[in-house]
Length: 115
Length: 111
Image (cartoon, rainbow over all chains, first blue to last red; front, side, top):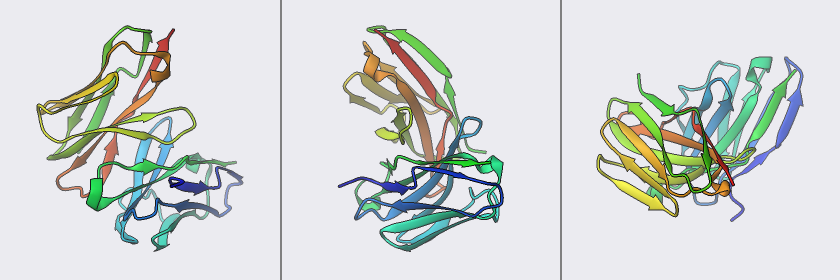
């Protein structure tokens, strides 16, 4: 398996622009997590899905952030409009709830820079 | 509020010099405690899960232990390739699969 796939790997945009981050989880995994990592705040859970349904979005910082999972093999995290303080590395992770829900497999991350 | 605190922030060791990393937690009810390793520019990589006080897990030079208030990651005779950031995380009984991460300990092992 190729592991969790994220795109793009790097994104540079200007303040006010819409940003869409993409994630393909490991096939067969029924949990998908979106995290944000910064030097100041560390790794923070934004939202997670189970069987494509959002379960906990309490970590989503503002209404500017939204996440969708239209099917088991694809998820998006959208920021509209983007602001400089959104600059961070965004990770997607997936896990198999039946086998070992504790082990989350992380993607390589998307480094977002908002100018 | 559920909290995870890791210490030290950074640790510099000579190759072969054993040491321990600490993870203290304050949660309403612990479901599981996890250790991850993160290399620069990469996503975290799962190492261990601990569920109850007294439990221990080992993998190569790493050994994780758990008490009711903290967890230790013991590194025996480290090598330069063990250099990474080690992250501790918890899930609570009331939080579902919500995972709370500590800030991490950056480990540097010099040859």
